[in-house]
Length: 318
Length: 318
Image (cartoon, rainbow over all chains, first blue to last red; front, side):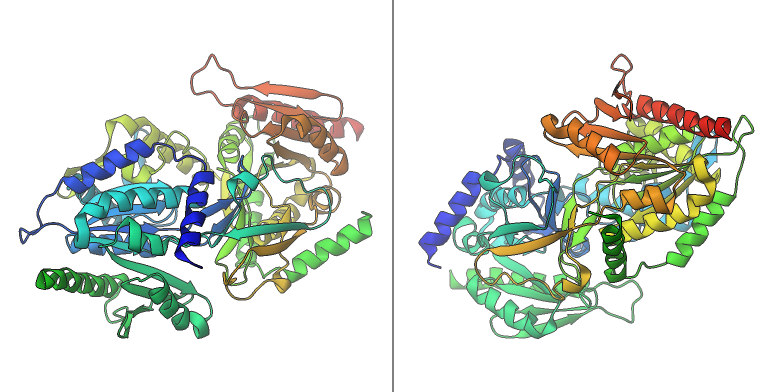
């Protein structure tokens, strides 16, 4: 597809999308977050990463009863956010409502009801077994938000996600090479254009249901070339079939001009991933000798180091 | 469709479904919950209601990355559960993972992180503003579970939901007229049969995606006639188009031999519903003069009273 056609498709996607609620408020929050710069411990300018997390939904009806969803717990994005903050990044966490939150991974599925017990008629206490997890979650989360290191922005639909990503990119443009995009969200490939969507609930009168879904225009290339041309961009490729995984990751790297593509396979994604770059593929594994260790720890470490090189290269060439 | 064809369709749906994990454990839990009978405050045999809540998902791939989902916050089911327990029912709460939980409706969206604040380096406390909501949620939830009045069973897919509903129905069969089904879950009308499903992630190579979905066989009629023929059954009808709502609710009442159908319209469903019965339609409204009142309060009250009549009618005719 030529670039003019892609731009037309993207324009038409945004034009036909339902307007984003609170877009002015979101822009204000973002500008405040990005501008309020507390230098890092080494006295340097802070880097900012936008971590996207969780799956986007595609409504099948305008008054939405049914939708197509992309499976994603949001664990990758939430855990990575913690390691980026540890590495002194400011994180814009663009996450699907209801998915995993930073600092909450060691809590049970229903934390609010499982972590507490009734002490007497009028009070309650944290269960001993969850005490450390609960305290850690609350303490670290509050420290990150209060310290101006974490801004959380929720989305649900593919329309909201792409509209917000565009606003974030535009706010981060001025950061130039200090900006990073870590695009871990599971974004829908197909959608039903808003205007051609059924207004009311699709009726299940009789027989099978036939549906035609259109491709979502690929925004990665405009993010790289137009929205934030200087930012360091990492995208993710998830497949269930290992045979085609690396090949598709390499294709994505070239096609969208990403700085790295993280290739992961559905069943082993918590154990290992492959970071595909222009020159080589780097396999990153969880440290199995340390209980509770996560693959996001060495993954973020590697990307932070590559981001440092990317920033330095620019200074050298000045 | 004749009854033989429906039975064949249902058999083939269950045969082709992926096996339910932990089905023996679920059956044990159910039997223990139902058999452990603490008489009500009037010394009568407890009634048991199965409340279903939230939407089911339809996987589009066997190693599930994409799925179709039915929108439902689960608020109706969670709130109704509270009123059934107040009315001294035992509740089997069959809910979609991640949806609203009983006693949690007055908590914020991200309760775990929004309700607490850090007190000093090593501890935290409940924010004053959320103190009552948090205490109430923990106290009431624990009282219901510890008192043997609430059993929570989570599901995600349409396959899990229908398999679990069948097990629950079979466990509740012996309760005869003391059993009630309150089917508030948003169940998918269409699905992709497991065997014809793509094993791997659907590729977004080029062009639009065409999909054919089959109708989920209607289990309501076999629930009524075969699984638990004596139970008092309430189903729900949600539409976005008021013009067809009542007509469709009346059709469902007759077709599935329900004792009542609760008709609700997407936009006004928290304010009012219509209970459609064989003889008349009863409009039920939230008491607007009481702040924080819910339409589930008078709705459950009405259905409990109709259930009482249903139980008494049987005693009279003996």
